[in-house]
Amino acid sequence: MLKKRNFLPENLQVQSWENILPFYENLLSRQIQNVHDLRQWFRDRSELESMLSEDLAWRYIRMTCNTADETLAQSFNDFVSNIQPQATEYTHKLNEKCLQSPFLTQLEQLEPAFRITIRSLRKQAEIFRQENIPLQTQLQIKEREYGMIAGAMTITWEGKELTLQQAANLLDEPERHTREKAYFAIQNRRYEDKDRLDTLLSELISLRHQVAVNAGFKNFRDYAFASLGRFDYTPQDCFAFHEAVKKEVMPLINEIFEQRKTLMRLDSLRPWDLQVDVQGLPPLKVFETTEELTEKTILCLDKLDVFLGNCLRRMREMGHLDLASRKNKAPGGYNYPLAEIGYPFIFMNATSNLRDLTTLLHESGHAVHSVLCKDLEINSFKEPTAEVAELASMSMELITLPFWDIFFKNEKDLKRAKKEHLEDILTVLPWIACVDKFQHWLYENPNHSIEQRKEAWISIYSEFSPQIVDWQGLEHFKAYHWQKQLHIYEVPFYYIEYGFAQLGAIAVWQNTQKDLQKGLNDYLNALALGYTKTIPEIYQTAGISFNFSAEYIKDLVSFVQQEWSNL
Image (tube, rainbow, N blue to C red; front, side):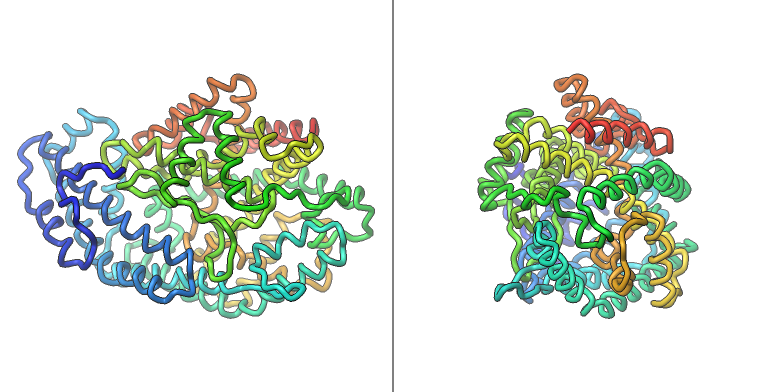
């Protein structure tokens, strides 16, 4: 149910910039004579921004649900081209207006939550440049090209057309020849578009670098840290994370893959041998339909806390779930917050495998976070940083583990599912470090050639991939392995957060293992803060530490390894 609007007409919709402009002008010209006026000004501004963000959200959601419909793409592009640039300009003017207010300090003292918002507004005002508005418009449109290219990728398998997400299930098949054939089909299809995707990234890097230079930064990486509001860590902390993962996690990963090769009795461990069950069991079939997946996920969440299950139940009633994989659907998955309605939208590409289960649990964590924040006073309070947002989602994957019997009635299947998921958690940390390190290189060297990019990727990937995997004859696929990661194209530098949050999620899981109710309450209390505290303070509320030192990583990975071994 929509909240009642106080500043905007209830029936106002975004038709053009002209029908939105009067509300920006009102905020810009309004007299603010005391701290209470300033607080109301923030509330009214939040109402306008919430309405606009939800309108853009639906345009994006509809476009990604059907990338082949040009009218949906045009609707999204129209907002980005004709409304957002104007709104960006006025947003800067509003930022300057409030930052010059003599009542700002008083508001921060009266309501400390505003300190976080005001800190962000100062940074936005500092890096704003008029000449970047058209460049950012170009970027938003160009970034969407990745989804259109990837969404159109399919293979033909035994007379059927499969999306690459559907085809990936074949890599779980016990028959090695089937896996090998599927691997080549998938990789050959990706390889067809490698030049398009390389060209696209080159264009994006060029535009992003220009934005950074315009704003007075040496490179886009440094600009991105400012733009993303990374107040609590630096690029050097990211480099320390990369080294810690290499030192503390990679030896364990190599051990796991050595064991895989031994148990499978293989002379050579190939890329198509990395997903299949080591005992040659058929892939776990978690559900038949996405309706079944949804219902069982709700019941699983209910077992943890009925509030959690009800969040997803309500979204199902509202039609806010699009879960099945199909042709011309953008790749990946997301939870898109809807600022006015309060209940977000979950999008994913489910087929029937274990990863689909963990993806829905992951996105459910985001959804619960959105619902917990929906009644916070202003919109910026509801927009936590990714380091906190991903803590919400990644923790949900782990703290629901005791209740996975909803999905697996057979004890052996249940243990196998848990073990596979814990293995994924360990192996994803090096991939996160690898992708993040690659992005640092891309933007520290913005004028690199395609060949230099390829060489850099191969070098970085060799640091974070098991040495035992045999890529002989597949080097051309390996050189473009990074192209499957949509974040590199669509949300640059949004990836290290998964690594930091994964560590936090393991710590949250540890807490719930000791005391389920206290661990859960601390987690939910942290999420309910939205973005009214710093990242370390929110992590502290969750009963954990915002820490990515080698020692901390070693302790957490050892805990996961022990749980994995116990299964």
